[in-house]
Image 1 (cartoon, helix red, strand yellow):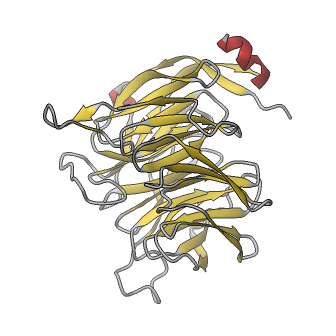
Image 2 (cartoon, rainbow, N blue to C red; image 1 turned 60 degrees about the vertical axis):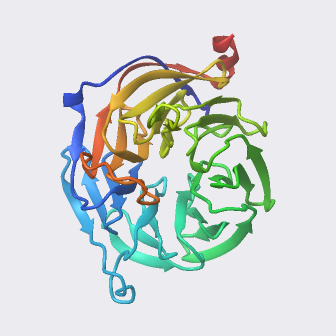
Length: 361
């Protein structure tokens, strides 16, 4: 089957009245995922809870409440900040990871608890299922990547290489995953069968988030305010935008807004970035993925801790918090701990990947 790239013609900025806001978590949203059929949304927060939402109605379908510290043995669920979440491509399994080094596996349909994976020695900061399989990749502040077989409730292997905490992880259909290595300044591609890794350099600050756009390209964001677009065959970024969300502070003491989340619409040229700058920004990968061009901004107050495009591309979901997902450096009092469902009005044209060179010429 041919893979087609969705190239966006005209994407219209949504009216603020069209953005739907879901509230249910008491503390900042840290991560979220959308079910493969775009009908359901799962969110998690610093209050250690998980909520399953109906996208169309905005209603809560299930709440897995967080437990108090010290109740780990008796409470079914998390008792520490949840920082990572993933759903399998068949919508069967939901995985969540927390600051207590634990990975919980849930049945996505009923939200019933299935397994608990232990083995990481520090905060679980990234989770992703390989598409078309039940193989789960996990990343941690212990600097390791682990591989699990969720269907068989089994640990597979551990991979090492990063020199600092791993802050983000993503994967697609190939038996590999990509990670962001925080202050070690590297992005890495882990080839699981070969037990090898490719190392990429580009950002100056801590690389805090990463997302694959397709099997050949990825986007990352850092606390120096930069976003980078990468091709897997080059060790340096294809392009980089510095101060992507501008700066804040007094003149002479200005600091770039940290990039706290990135998202990409799979097999398209559309990317979104989040910060605490007061807006989510949409970007177009232009000139054959050699340039990032701004499309428009969506005003949102608070730390945009998680971004996900729906599989159809019809909407974008943002997880908002009064605080950054990884710490409490600032607090934006006027922000609401909430989930924003942002409709995307677009005209799309489908082209085979081979047409990219022609289109970008």
